[in-house]
Image 1 (cartoon, rainbow, N blue to C red):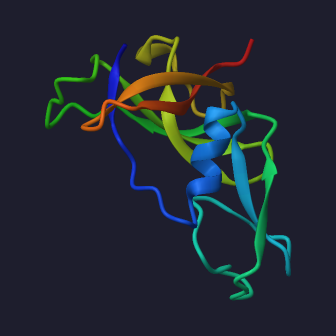
Image 2: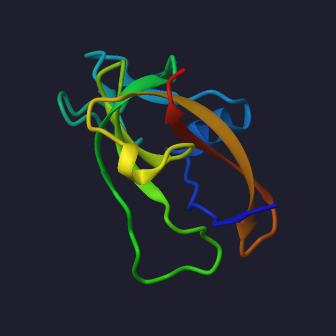
Length: 137
């Protein structure tokens, strides 16, 4: 099983990480003004409300931007790997890996879809499910 660094999970982000285990990409929503926000945080940036719930994304979007980090090399990653900013159909952007495509074939604006992959979390050894994207097909 491949490995990844374990995230810091807080009361404000636990719903997101639990959703990934259930293969749901959950987006936080302010219940006072309905503004969606990614990444999760305690307060709405639009109306300053502390009230929120979440919606489940349809998992589709487009590549907004991408990079191929190379330094510092991390022993648990397979290079080249692509980190992309995905604009979801719901209108928010989320950072993720883009897989299943040669880096030279990636285009800004290309349609993508989410999939879920389980890793061994470092340093705990627990299972960690992450969202990743691939070309829509």
